Image (tube, rainbow, N blue to C red; front, side, top):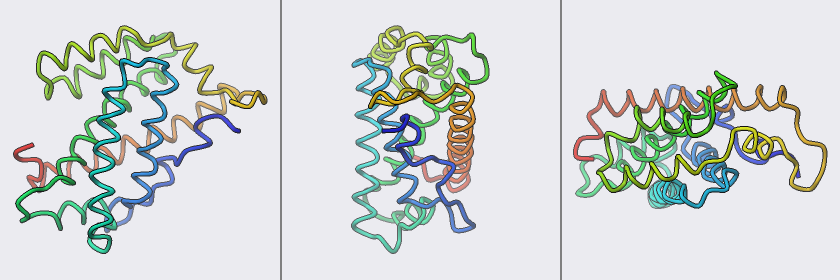
Length: 204
């Protein structure tokens, strides 16, 4: 079995056209982020995983109910407007927030090899999720971010072949990880602008 990033859909492979971001491939790539937290070996981050997974499920439910109207994320949101409840629109908004939190933390790790995991996640939390959380949830995240492993431990797991084969080199990992993160960042920013321009996040 190859290293983790070779086993999941990369955001760099998610089709983005004039019509929008491909829903099916985006959800596949997002599931890869959920699995990424398993490598942290920290049960405290189950709150993040559960939130990501729950919102992915909301989008899958909408996709199954209205596949022709949900081929891209943008179409999915637009076609849910006017309905009394908009679980997929809300789910996607929160999924994007969680992905942004993860992406910014990982980008900090990639940009400065001396930055430890705790600092990267704490800094990212301050500028992404914190503003949406109450006192209790902030406390849960505070505990989680103090319990993350050292960066060396995380990247060793990210490079490892679970079957005992030769691990990926740090250089090879950096190329794939930077591409993965760059595409994720681009999609998140695109969708954040879409929500802002259309006022789709009001009430959430």
